[in-house]
Image 1: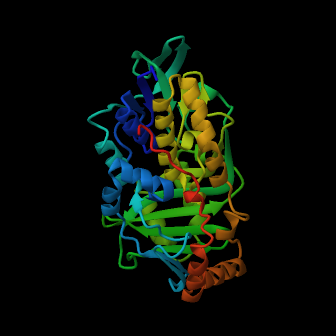
Image 2: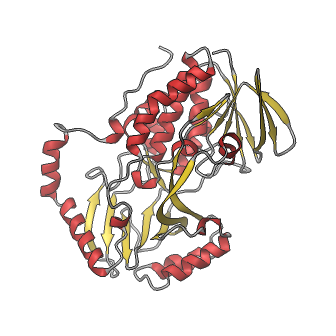
Image 3: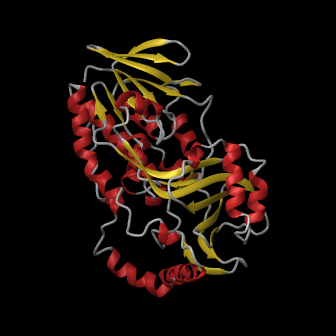
Length: 398
């Protein structure tokens, strides 16, 4: 297409992936990021299915594999740290995936592969967009005004750029779960196995090993939407202290690290539903456009695949409107399937009573048994219908 100068908002995963492919197709790309530098925090993410194929084409699969967290699987434990069920890596869709990497490590890999060919603007953001016949006039927070042919929003589920383009049209739908992530020192009870602990009143503490000698901890709890995500970080910490004070297991250890931690993520787990992903010369991808929620295990993979398809369609069509329409047609059915949460999710993993926790651990123990795994293997090749493999990727530019 004739439009060659593209601005992308967001330097996490979708934005740099999009920029990587746009550069390969001959576009001039700029990424603006509100943070002063790369946001390298976060928990484990995985790359699977079509996204893994794209990582191969990008030449980064082995780098992702080399940065593996080393997690051996997930142990489901009781208040005495006794294992009730174990899901080894690769033996269940519920546990650790083949390619597990810290979100920050993936962000760094993508940055290293784009920084020489893409202009990065850190500590800045878009505050106004004025579309005209030949492009989009963009006003930045630092007062600079520049013109671009297209603007792509890829800055996350709470995207401010999305609001500038689409207003309240996209719907951010909470699923009834709050979660907080942060990093704590590793102790003798930690190992290369992740540990999942259910407390009564629909609370979970989850601790996972990383490849940096620390432990990634998380709290999650079921709740109707209460606006907790809008509280200050100090208020959120106080809420977690109150919610998990009597949770048992290693709650006191994790809570003791909470107050001194400056890198605490807290949010309402939600999904984004948008009736359209483009408007004029502006479009969106990644979590800003179609966040499926971490409950699907497909958020990062969707970001990678969506960015790849959007770049490919822009390279193929002469007019941006045709490219945006083709992107929507090719990708929306896949997104719609991924966003369908299984019945009972997330409540099934967050039982409220001791009896509910007992039943959950019993079910997980059955799932993790070698007999059940072997039976599953007999049918897996005959009836392969995993959602992360249901999209056929085109090799654009060939």
